[in-house]
Image (cartoon, rainbow, N blue to C red):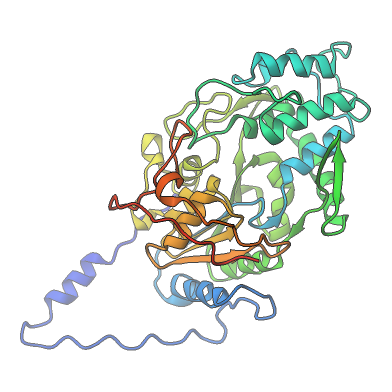
Length: 427
């Protein structure tokens, strides 16, 4: 169990000190902050960051870390995984490897894999993958291109190869997305250790592939390589040396993420992802809930507001409906890092620095460029950065994803609308 954090406050001591100063006595001007000691953990100067970003992050580490002399609970830093700590996507890599090696087990019915699967998707998958393979046995996806194509198309676009919607119904668009939940659901029937082994093999393959390479999955051409970002490895290492408690919170399967997180020095206890429910030692299509949302089939994931819930519940031990709410500063992360709208809530919750990797995602970049608290740090992707987003971001009209999925104006805490933003930090 992760240790429960306690709120350590200096308000009473500060009040007593203030009360002890006579009214007629001038309060001395605070001394200029002392520069950090030379032995304080420092980010590597040999690794390139955009502009003054290294200095901004170092300032936050010095102010919040062990060299600050602040005492109290350890500060917390949380990173998204895909395209934040690494380049490209571990769910895609693992699914591609599994399809290539016939590791997807035939479900009793495709409708049973997700509560949102449409009749059209069920028909397309049944037709493409057939019914000759016994339930629970591996589908021959390495040879059956049609089956591989249907599975990967649902994962990529939430549509069938024929263009019909693959998922339908109602869900909270700030808490889940069915096609994200569907990846761990496809591995139902395997043991967690087996899925972790699949992910480890996919990792070795992706790390060995040249940067910029692609691979073919069915008829889909996708990224064939993955790389850890050296800058993020160094940032995580420095944060840990400075006394931060560092976590990964990912919208990928937690079991898959566990096969990767040790590459930046983080163990399973510090890796949070989609938590599949096991029964008799094997994965099922069930997924753990968060806060006041019970276990189900993916009604809440570490996705958008769901990432806040998982951080509050698992790291700060805040239970029930309260886990969905933004907490007081003492129960919030110091650093949040992400690359997409799925990360915007928890990254915005950070009190020390919000690190946004620019992948042209509207809500995240609107928050970042608005920079309401002056603590946003924007960086292009370290490998194959995207060019400037033409036309900028429509923050004032379509900057916020509502719970029904319909975009609307993005607002600051005081209710004012964030104006449209130009893309200013890019490759």
